[in-house]
Length: 436
Image (cartoon, rainbow, N blue to C red; front, side):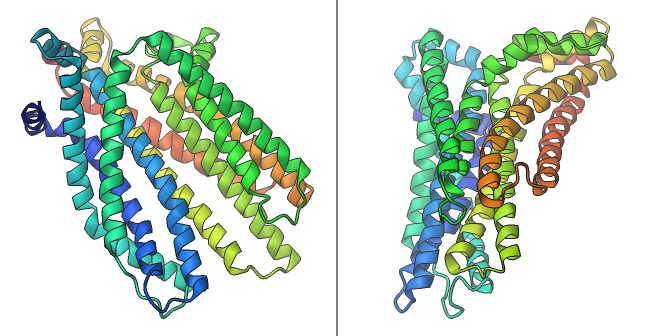
């Protein structure tokens, strides 16, 4: 099965490009920040610099690991779903489920290994730039030299390969398991995340404005609430569509398409919810904290500067990964509909009408994802702002929220429409024949 996996990669390299990009970005981020562990372990470094470097590596390295797993899992899930006929043919030819799993896992590991190898150079450069940021802000002594050693190299390769293998295994297993059992477990974890998140944001009111960990509870609560909403993405989308009616032929067809493909679009909606909630909540709370400290005339210590740097870095990583996940998922899902678009055109639809349907679908997804992401973000922002500054909704929220929504809309609508335009260049008869 390993040889079959290698032949599959050679015959269709474009199919694995999304997995390669996710593995490359993940390995680059993990190596970049874990090189801070190598740097902190050098002899002669003061304790403050060492603590700052180790803390940043641990926090962002953990987030990076989770994001690598989810990004690779997202791309592989779409890949496996689109290869359902191919995998079924292998089973009919005598391949066992275990052999098919080994083939898919082997493909993912091989692609991830190439991505990790390509990430070594950029990670070395990124580590130097990151150290310069810490030194310019006074968090790390200027005499500290960057070191890219075994911790960065081995952690980047090992975590990327393990994440790819685990994500591939779960993608194949998810495609073959009974749907009822899968939905039951997802519902349990979704409600658990919502309950824990609600408790976390509510506990903020029991804290004082001077607590050092004041931002932790509402931020983590907002993230957990967004995770809960994301896990319920299919149910939320179906509930919205049951009462939704859009005018015009394109709007009517868009709603029907979304109802039929709600389960397949859950991954896109999950990414939108998480992106909106985490970005809005973290950036707004950090802006409120920075402005409050400035008004009070307090000089930020090293810990405060480190926390601020980590918050912006984590949000930047999340933005990059979610954008990659959105682009990959939307590109794959739209390309897969080539036959559908060809049939619509043969039935009399114009290219403009097809684009209108795709645009309406993207608009519904964007509005739904932004709405539930905003609800999760506000659940954390409001308690934090009330305790920290005696306001209910900070003025910083609106500018940050509009920027986040603009990015989400641009990525979702831009990718969907651009990919559809590319697919529509193929003549309708040819598209139907090739897809068949």
